[in-house]
Length: 92
Image 1: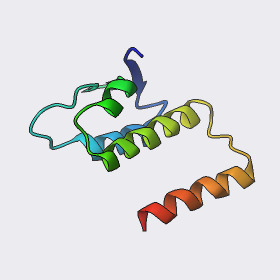
Image 2: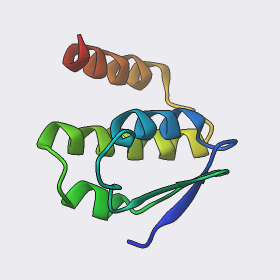
Image 3: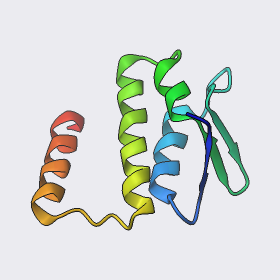
């Protein structure tokens, strides 16, 4: 997959999650190039590289969030509750 540009106006929560994961690194993360309007992200490269398995899980979560944000976040109520529960159970 080629890199896609994620714009702050379109996916602010996704970019905040990626920034929290990838900021303050000694070396820039291959597959993540932030700029003044957002970031270029290569999801495959990020998920296959030097990150730990838990960090790779966060990349997959961020990718899912980007998809939802770009489509207005319109999950059915039952699915929305289940997604929240799954994330809460792994982050508490």
